[in-house]
Length: 156
Image (cartoon, rainbow, N blue to C red; front, top):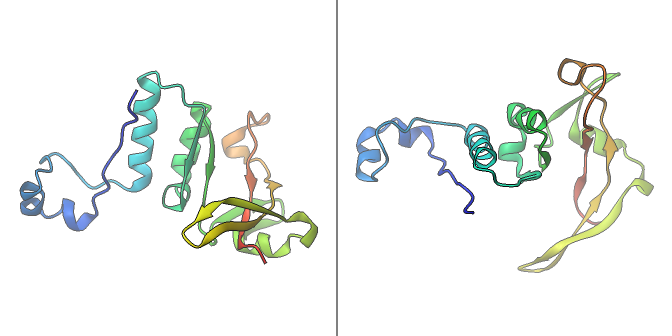
């Protein structure tokens, strides 16, 4: 079964109807964020019966909490990147992901390849830590767990 896809169109395109008409973009097409497009694709896949048990996405999608929350509500696992400025709530307050990464002890990291690139192996340092549940979303008994921060860039 083909997986649906969506073409991201920036506001500069969707607000220029002449440009859209010349490119054969339907008149009813409005601007949507990448997260909104991703949510629509996931919903269409599941509604069509595609057996999707997990999703991966880069930070353009992962930074949108509504996209991550939808996946959790649908019972779909996910691995997404988030920007280093992404905030994580803990019992001690809010922390940026890059602040948490800086606090991880050296023995928490493992060098793992994520495949060959144009210039050879792409080896990164990886670690993970279980993040606290969010009572507003998870209630008293969470059905899933969140983990992060997984990566700190090319291995040293």
